[in-house]
Length: 313
Image (cartoon, rainbow, N blue to C red; front, side, top):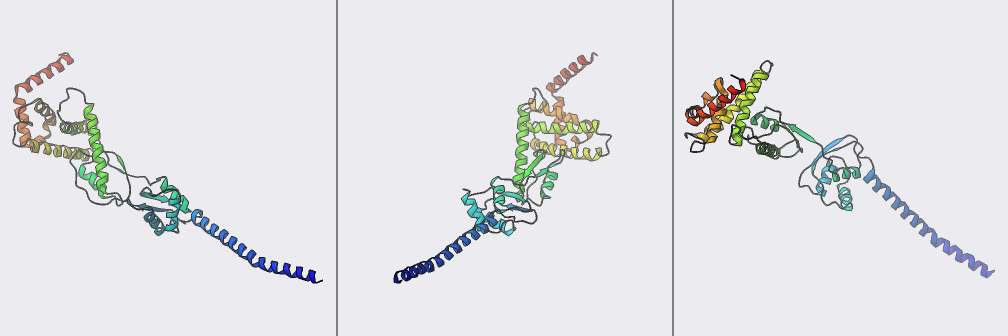
């Protein structure tokens, strides 16, 4: 009887010891489970209620990007964003402007930035716009920063260009100028032999004059013809102004008379009766001197002979 009582007492003591341990373990498991659910909700749970666009500037650290996203209510915790990026092995992320749809989670936002899915924004410089008009287009884009000087006429390639909101206008303009130089260099390298210009600048003048002639013959009946003609002639005047300054008081473009002068005279003569050349007395005198050269007369006579033979007269 005494032995049975001792055994019962031992079992009772063991049960009283395990009860609090079991409760503590259950509490810890519940805490870990709750923490896991909370972390999962923070990482993968829906965040934004409406679509939001955020610009992450160049030079921002991962921490700084997290703070910008938290400030815009894309994510709930910048610290958790930084930890997730580090866990993925990301110590830097691509700057740019990102569009985050409604319901974007922290991990979805991180993946979008890791993949560099920036918003594609474009600016178009239409054909026929002057450099000043191109600069006005850039100045009208509120997403760009800073001021720019008007570049030389004809330096900008009419095209559609990609830009990032927050970028400087000078950076975008530099891409336009690079595109213009690259295109002109490529066209110059592929030019046909015996063309009536000796330099790329001469070719630009010729292009403007030909553009005027094209407008006269093909667009003269259009309602917008006068506006178009005025714009083209303005471009011709600007390029002739550059040529006039280059010539100055000299007789010829490069010191002694050369084939380049002969070719430029041929180009300027295409302005004919437009009256534009009369606005530049030194260029008018340059053309007159060129026409008086025996070399020019011989070249003209040879050209007329070709035309006469071709026409069968």
